[in-house]
Amino acid sequence: MPCVARSAILQENEVVHYHLINRTVRRAFLCGNDAHTGKNYDYRRQWFVIRMAKLQEVFLIDVGSYAVMNNHFHLSVRTRPDLAKKLSDKEVLERWHKLYPIRDKVGGLIDISQEIFSCRLADKDFIKERRRRLSCISWYMKSLTEWIARKANKEDSCTGRFWEGRFKAQVLLDEKSVLACSVYIDLNPIKANLAKTPETSDFTSIKERIETLSSPERRLFLVAFRACLSVFEEEAPFLLIDEKDYIDIVTQYALGIVDKKDIESRMGFANIKELDLVIQSNSRILGTKESRARYVVQNGVRRICGKSLP
Image (cartoon, rainbow, N blue to C red; front, side):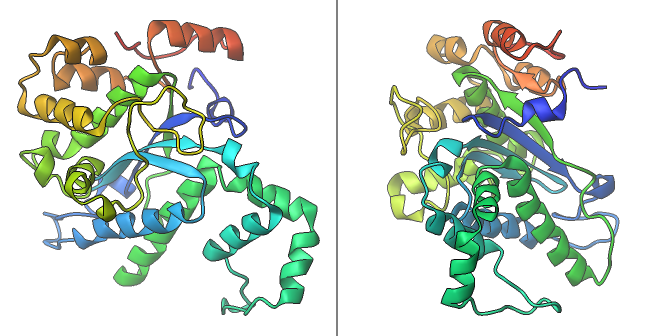
């Protein structure tokens, strides 16, 4: 049994960072090159990027890092219920209808008349629930994974599970845990021998960030990293670090040449293996010893499984 209940992990009324993971059923290679069937499903990894870009138009959830692998994916996100509260009722409804338009009994789209729109707008309970969902991790993951599963099953002319189960979530308590988790995510293709360098790591946030350094207009949906003291501003950075510095950190770990004392002091890990050991310790709460101790007191839990960040 987990040390911390899932309901305690997903704190819907607070700005929280999460590490999210989900795997395909039986860990089959349903999103990459399947050696068993001889089929290549690499193109399905692009579906994730397309869908996340769509979801960014609707949900108030920042995506800081992502890596779409052959049989699983990782996301580092931040919920923004603070921004959801600022939306007008009309804006909430307009956002929701982008993703979930009104349909008839057979699934056909129904053109929303002003009368129908006004009727829904007058339903305060309906609006309140949709406002909550706009910054809800569970609804975000449902909207991502269900769309992928339906699309893949339709293509394969089959039914049944595409995903192994519900997604796994880790709370990232502090700046150090967000940075460590982001680096861990961006290094996934290199550790799996799918790429040699961050620049060639397809379907990852690190490749997108490298490409957008010279062409900012190519940024799809990633929230910015930059030096800023406030983490609650509307355009708040995901990490308090310059993007060039972040790319340098990922590159050094990827090449195994972490020799700068400032990087080791900032991250606390000398190599990828040390980083993996902590992230993969199955703890639902990731942070330094001090941050984890505060979490225990504030949330009334007895203990937290897994290792602390150094």
